[in-house]
Image 1 (cartoon, rainbow, N blue to C red):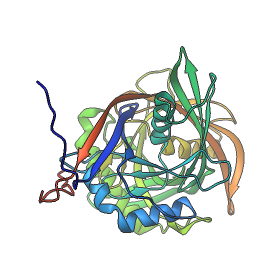
Image 2 (spheres, one colour):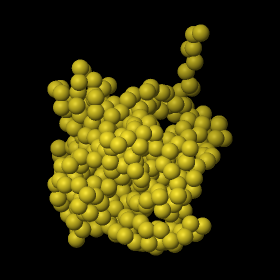
Image 3 (cartoon, rainbow, N blue to C red):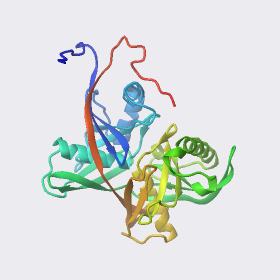
Length: 342
């Protein structure tokens, strides 16, 4: 079948490359968006939230996406030595950092030659809304086999608190930051598993816990007001593979479930486990996702954020390219900016 149809010249056309990290999708928008001004990545994020949110819903929501779609917009760097900047987007809005997104973005940029770096250990310096993230790839037989990223300083914000969750009762929780703030709870305290069969219940529990913690604990990031919000709930439990440290499931944004172990969540866990004395500096710990896919975290050195003791974490994972797409927007389509069903 020969297909020669092209969208009319007046229709917006947006091109993307599709990838995933450990099962979590990343739609990278490579062409078709207007310039995004701003002297900082947070300023670019604020501009996109005010002026481009209809494009976020167009590409993340149905019929082009789904309730658990995730995306990235490469932008110009805002630091003298930066290779690029990035904005991350999802079903609810624009996030501040995304570990699986960094791994997939670095893989795609290097695999496609959109950024050329020779050698077996190419490095990309990426400006994110949360700060500088450095991605170090490993090239084997000409392909990007894995990516490790050094994240922003990560820290425990509040440990061993309790909150009364409607319909659940009082549960202990810890809040930590790994590029975004998460509430960490033990799955055993909720009598829930961390497998695909628990998917719907995890969404319900994670969402209720998130809203209860938001009401219980105001969050103030010492360095940036725009980072001062609770992004999600991470439920933790034992690993299924005895060679691994643990398993967790992240429920974030508007009830999205991360298919990967969550790179920013693993970063926050590096801060938690180091503060507890569970891991030493540079000691690796491997975390499973709801799918059984993994990322490996490390706390590589000590740092601080305001008055909070912090660590600089690294997280290693693997991404794959699954396709490329050209999306058009019919101006007469009543659903052109998308819709979402859960």
